Image (cartoon, rainbow, N blue to C red; front, side, top):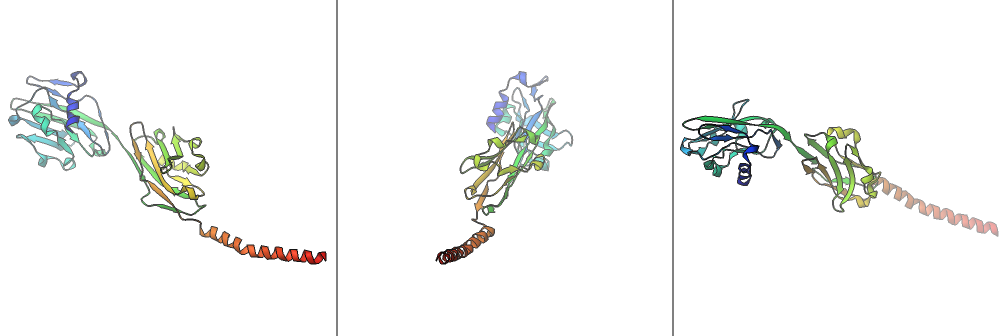
Length: 290
């Protein structure tokens, strides 16, 4: 966290708006902030020179609700003053405060975190403030099957893959791969299925549910399961800014189905009949020849 904060304070002043005051300069950010859902975002607020800690108060709040995001007062952080939604999620960089850096790190970003935040700096002589806004939230969540998928030879199976994201699904690239062999089983790119990219072993057997794709459903239907299909499959999703993998799906081959065994049994049962019929036919021909 400290490296992140130090990196921010090294930015040139031309890139950061300055609020000029008689006593000191307060730095904020004019740029709208983008955060990844579940990730962390830096809310910048710092002055050009250290301020005496004994007379310093820094108050971070939401401008819409007035909720206290974090408070520094009487020489220390005051987590007991935080709104419930920000407890254990919003943090000062404690070692940086004596240097005049009052930026916050907001972790575990939620949808409700979008909005305007105000940093107010109080000293005995004056108070000044700056604002930052989290406007855009990004997320890419991929989920798959929690349990192995079992299949007999010749059966059709579905391997689940569901995508929740802030971008349109047509902007995604989705790959199904057989990871133990590193085989490309199925590909969705540029808004459409790409069967020409499939490995020959899965051409015509592996397909998306096309009508479900707009809903974020990238499950794969695998037809006529074969012995060599057993193993681990993975749904990999990529956007311009992120990538994610679903839980690996294990396809467990159970051998031949009861139907196949029935056919095999019938074939075995027919063999003696065929042999007997053939033998009788040969015997009849021999007798007829005499």
